[in-house]
Length: 265
Length: 205
Image 1 (cartoon, helix red, strand yellow):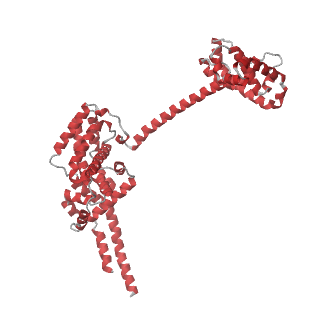
Image 2 (image 1 turned 30 degrees about the horizontal axis):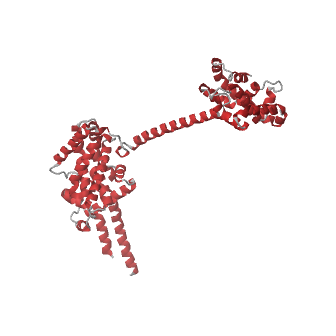
Image 3 (image 1 turned 180 degrees about the vertical axis):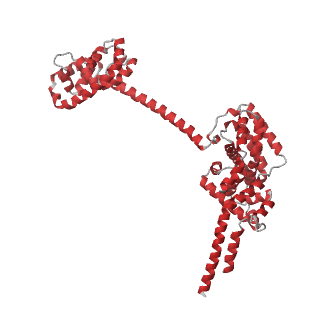
């Protein structure tokens, strides 16, 4: 009995399965059949006043055309071009905006380098020169601003960086003092702050110069790194001097000449 | 496979439609009339599935907007179908909100479900299926299935375009269309083999 029941169940299942699989394949095909059926039935369902609808639509079209409404901007939901084209135009826009942004930021960065490190002046035509001048500032400024015989170029490099900076700033300060804008630069602000006021700068500089020339030996242990720095900076200034020279010749001003000399050395 | 069949028919006009739309955008009103004649039947069929007898009025509203915004549109013939269907759908949903129509009655659905069996083969069904009957069947489907079926079958959109009109993922729309078509096929008696199988299984028990 149990066998019969199970046998009957098997038979039923066996018969059901082919039916199911056939209906499955038919079902997929019937999607198309039903679509045909529906399309034929539903798409033909136009009514008597179809002409009336067309007339009104065309009238609206003419009104919009004559009022200039057709020049309206395309919104995102109006753009039904194939996906690739939409993406292409969007990615072109994105690329352009990234390019503009990077140029802007790059310009700001370059300008910041120039204003932070400049030891020369604030004139407009020195933008290019500043890039190299800021990198090579220390070695090039030192030989020209220390005319004392004790300060040879080799001992200058061995000096502590701070003293050299301050000394260079002091020397340049004396040259450009009273010329206006130059004193607005960040370097001058630092110098004035360090001296404790603009009127104290001269005294401060005198003290700095004295102490710097009195202790050249204190920097000797760090000569290795100092040498590296100097060499590297020297290369940079070598690159920069090519750009700079013609300008220096055209405008032989007081604050530029020492620097040109320093580079030629 | 079924997906390829229907859009292909609609695509037969898409070249012509795209050209007409381009000329209409340049200001040619005769070309706009051509585009209207190509698009309107499908649009009207789709709207009948959503708003029933108000479809003509809603389509008229939709065409006013289409005529006004035609300059904004960018795309080819197939794209124009999708764009116009989106506008028509928004107008239809506005219309339903205005009317505050209650959900379609279950009674209609039940009537529809009771009717199949009259057609033993789909050839016979093909001969006898009227517009009214077909629309009844489609409106008996859940809304998402009905819209998916209509956009595909009547408007002639492909899967991604239908999904964009409905604001859903293509997979969800494809599934809805498939389920809707399956159900319609069952109601039309196209799937006779399955019924036989079930009956046999029932008899054997």
